[in-house]
Amino acid sequence: LAKHAHNLWEECCSSLPRSPSACTRLHANQTSCCVMSAGSKAFLSLPVLREISIQVGLQNGRLLRIEQDGLLRPFDVSTVLWPAGYLLSQWVSSQEQCAPREGRRRVLEVGAGTCTAGIAAATCGYEVVCTDVASWSLPLATANAHMNNVGGLVRVARFDWDDDDGLKRVAAMGPFDLIIGAALQFEKWLPRMWYVLEVLTDKSDTCTADTGTGALVALSHTTGSLPEPPAPFAITERVSGLDFGMHTAWSEVESDFEVLCLLRTR
Image (tube, rainbow, N blue to C red; front, side):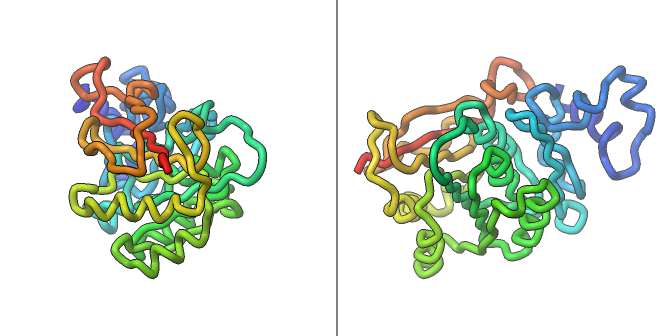
């Protein structure tokens, strides 16, 4: 299934040499073949490491064009869209997260890379700060925001999670209603991750899992791989990739990815 979907995507949609008539031969239209969305199996091709541009269909009906530096940096984590980032873009553009709310709504994306999830949030009206430690990802994120007509809602900033001064600067851009991150390689920076998230949510109102107030943290990652969070965080929900049609390459009733939702308890 994965090999077929990947081959189909490369033949029909890749900017690299391909067979122009492949989609016609396989009776696939452009959406089912090329757009990474819940209505296709194109997401099984992610990451498409050498591509300069891909299309992502969001839950709110918006279609994003995302530029990558895949051809220049084919194995660079921060300049291509990865499966966890794709899932996060689906989750943040879902009806529940996109529902109109009173007042200003601010989102912080950490480890943003191409800023796909942050841009998805901006299409729902959020004011977004996309951050990454990789300086070469920042102009890419800026270009993607403007290309998708949300440049006025998206701010881009460099953020090194190990830099306490940088952490204070980013926290001062808040308070944030939602903090999101995908495939953050937490195994390399625990327990620092929990400290960073605690600082970033500190200026929000104290929240509890019962009241559902304050800053929400949403982390997209491989299913079951993120350990139980320490206080002051509590898990409120685990959202399977299946909720957005993101199944595995070998089974349509299993998913390799999930979104873990957390709230501060004090």
